[in-house]
Amino acid sequence: MNAFPLITILTAVPLIGGLGVLGLGAQNAKLARCLALSSSLIALALTLVLWHRFNAAYGGLQFEELHPWIPAIGVQYHLGVDGISLLMLLLSAIVVPMSLAASWDIQEGTSLYFCLILFLQAGLFGTFSALNFFHWFIFWELSLIPAFFLIRLWGGPRRAAAATQFFVYTMVGSVALLLAFLAIFQCTGKFDFIDLSDLARNGQLIPALAGKIGWYKLAPDEIALIIFGGAFLGFAVKVPLIPFHTWLPDAYVEAPTGTTMLLTGAMSKMGVYGFLRILLPIFYVEIRSLRTPLLWLAVATIVLSAYAALAQTDLKRILAYSSINHLGYCMLGIFSVAGFTVDHATFATAKTAALNGVTLQMFNHGLTAATLFWFVALLEKRSGGLRGLNDFGGLRKVAPILCGLMSVALFSSLGLPGLNGFVGEFLIFRGSFPLATWATALAVIGLLTTAIFILTILQHVFSGPLNDKWSRFQDLTLGERFALLPPIAIMFVLGIYPQLVVGVINSTALTMAQQLR
Image (cartoon, rainbow, N blue to C red; front, top):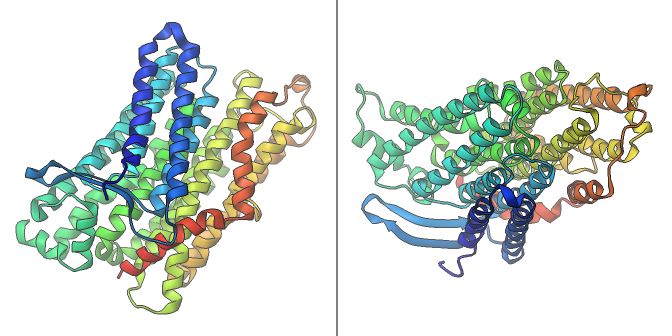
């Protein structure tokens, strides 16, 4: 503990880079772009150093940094990563350079735009590595503010309403989350996630809550459920779970492409990460007691969002609902593991498989969804802003490279074996089926509906007769091909050899499954 502060340096790199980019001003737009990309690549290199030095055989926290900060209120500067948080750091480090590359042509307010993206990246790094609520909440909110301004200042025609809705929803969730953890601190005197998890695992958290809070003579379990409800709302909005999802389609559609890539590629994972890292260990008893309605929410998120995507004609809106659908599988895996406390070998294996699947699905969806939104932006760029399902047709005849690479990403989203999207979903279904059979069976409807709207995109955009106005449609340039090569290559590599990631996260998933009793 308190060795070389690699995580602190990793978080500081985008902050310093963002300040440098902002200082360059509007007259140095080209230099601002290059500095922002260089900062993100340095952050990626540092993340790969963490990955290389990480001991995959150990399921606990590594690279811990622990320093007193505000001892009077139990606030410590506490950082650390395990396999789950390390993979989320890697995802953030990959998606941000992709976002910057997709935003390269932005001309207005270039320095501010790229500065805000780097600040958002710092918020992501802090959220995925902080272990004290006070410290963690600062970074949780730090990611919200840049995202609001990115949508509000550079978004589409309805950007003001979309940004306001995004801000109000997420702020209400954040306030509920803050009040819940202030109540917990009032009763326990602790903000540290590890300490709170230990209290919950030892059965001391609920008595502590009941001992200090007496609301209308409620029972201890009822008080714990109310506090859990506040924390649940904060993360459910961020995921988002249905019915807390209504801010997402407009935000994704109106945001500039680079921002949409960050929203779906990394920021949505903050909510799932919160369920996995914070709510599940601390409120395991409450999740187990509400397991059936929570599973219904997960199934509704999977199935209803898939049908909503099927009803859309705007490609961006289709992918927005598809993102909700894919994150619903993560919530299915998380809620399914909360059902059994016995040490039966079958259930233990299923829990580990589900947790591995959730973590892998978070990474795979983030990479694939960000890449798909990038492809939609390329279509818009070449068509004068069109992105309707029926605006194209036959593009594979004039742009075979673009259509071929986008098809890879679409099939990855579909979960085709051999691509990265298959492995995470398979592990989730493998783990959740023996734990929550009825919910898993209903979730298959979402898989079938996803196949329909993905194949519809392939048919309407790439196949059929070529519209005459697209006879001069430009294929990918050499630079665009090189920029898209890394994410496409990762889709193939993880589809063929998922052990590259599973080998790193499995010990953490196994440790977590053993602690959830």
